[in-house]
Every structure is written in C-alpha cells, then in structure tokens.
Amino acid sequence: MRQRALLSVLLVHAIEQTDLAGDALSHEDRMLASSEAADGRALPAAAQAPAQIDRDSERFLARRAEGLLARLRVRSPGVDRILAAAAGPTGLDGAILLLGFAAGVAISFADGTRIDVFAYPLIALILWNLVVYVVLITRAWSPAARDGFLRRWFARVYANRVRARIETLIIHSIGFNAPLAPGLRRFAADWSEVARPVFRERARRLLHLAAILAALGLAAGYGIRGGILRQPAGWGASVFGPASAHAALVTLYGAASAVARVPVPSSHDMQALAWTSLTSGGGPAGPWLILIACTALLYIVLPRLLAVIITTLALWRRSATLRSPPSFDAYLAAVLRASPTAPAPAPQPPPLR
Image (cartoon, rainbow, N blue to C red; front, side, top):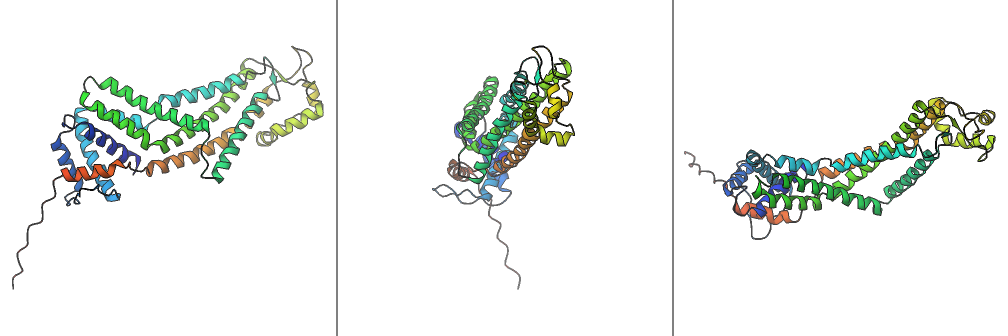
C-alpha cells in the first residue's frame, strides 16, 4: 500500500479501535463511509475468520478512510497536521544539516592561523568518506548485510523524533480534541512499527546530506580564512622536502587541478611557499582555496549527491510498497461485518413471447 493511503487507513483504524462509543467518529458515519467506498457494489461477505487483504480490499479501506477523514476534518482539522508530521521532515532534519555545515566550518580552522596547503582537515574528511563508500559498496554487493550500529541507532532516533512530534501535536490539541487523543497515540505507535523501512531510508538520506553540507562548510571555512581573514597559505618544510611535497600535493589535488585548471606548484615553487618562521613565509591563498573546494566537490559532494539520489529512489520505492500490518485482516473483517450490504438488483420481468 502506498504511504499516503496507509497513513489514512492507519489513522482511521486507530481511531475506530479506541473510539468504541463513536464520540470522534459516529457509527453512522462509519457505515456511510463503507457504503460510499464500495461505490455501489456489493461488499464481500465477511466470515468469522479474518478477511483476506488484497489490492481490492486495500483500495476499499483507503477510500473508506478518506471519506471518514473528510468528515473528521470538519470537526478536527488538526488531523492533517498529524498526518503531515508522520510523513514529513522533523526538527531533527534541520538540526543535523546545520550541525554538519557548522562542523565543516569548525574543522577548517583546525590548523591554526595559517592555511596549510596540505589541508589536513580535508584529508581527514576525505578518508572518512572513503571508508563510508567502501561500506556502501560492500553492502550493495551483499543485500543481506545489515546496517551498522550507528545507522540502526540513528534510524531509531529518527523514528522516535517523528513519534515525539506527533505526541507534541496531540498535547497541544488535547484540550479541544480529547476523544481523539487515544486514537492518535495508537496511530503514532502503529506508524512507528509499520514505517521502519521508510525511516531507515530517510535517516540514510539525511546523513548523506549532512556529509555534503560538512564538505561545503569546510570549503566555506577555508574561504573565510583566505578571503576575509587574509591568512597566507604555505607548508612546513620540516614535514616534507620540496620534491616529496609536490608529489603529495599532486596526489591530493591532481583531479581538482585538472578540473579547475589551477596548476599544483612545482618543486621549485614549493620551496618559496615554505614557512620561514612562525609569522612569515607562505603565499596567497587564492589558488589553494580553489583546489580545496574542487577536491571536496569531487571526492565528497558528488559521490554523496549520487548516494542521495539512490536513497531517494529507494525511499520512493519503500513509500509505494509499504506492507499492511497483520491486524488489517481482522480490521477488514470487522468493517465488512458492520457495513450494510448493497441492495440486490430488482428482478426483471420475463421476456414477452
């Protein structure tokens, strides 16, 4: 069942299971919605055993739920906010994205008051992302492999944030919507169980987006250091010799240099960029800022953007193929038993001879 339809059916199901007296949804409204959902056709017979959920019965329950929600919105328009909270982003999304960008800016200042052309914070970020890429590729070749502890934990946190957001809306509306509160709470619990695959994909996509923003924050931080604070760029000659420094920088910035057409300085030029003291040496930071930004784009932003696209496609697939909970079999049977059957067609007169 598609996510939108399943959300509606889950919400109506939860309300009906907790609103036995019909205070939120009257029994007359429920029977009328069943008749309307049947669209003039006779409902299938409901045996004592639970009815079988198939595509036709799912469509029937979805049409019936939409009809009941249309009636419920007149008295309790807040149900739309509950559905939006279940299906939409949470405050955690914005916080994680902002944290990712801020972390990128912060680590760009890790090498002090002068820009080291080796950009060790960039190297650390690239290495971390390479580890993630290896894990993702390994998991792609092994579909049975489970997510790591961090991803499973974050998916649970994400699901709990969705449930907490719904609970906050319930608390704010309970004063004038008391009969609905038990049903809404049951809906939040049911949705947390049913939507686990969706929450996992949403959490994965959020982490990829946070990694992109961390790389952009890193580039922005170096831009602030070189463009606004006017910090010089150089390197410590005690770490590498000019020849080995050139070779290391070609390895790090070679691809970015080819794309941006900014050459990596030769061994001779590297000697001129060496720090001569704690406060002197180095050179303009402009070319290095371009190389750092392009390297972050090539090794972090673009691969993570591809991962975002793949995860978004997986999220759409998950949202379109969510499984109905096992309780829907008994729920369908109860709905059918309580529904009025369509009248039998009037007998036709025998043809004239």
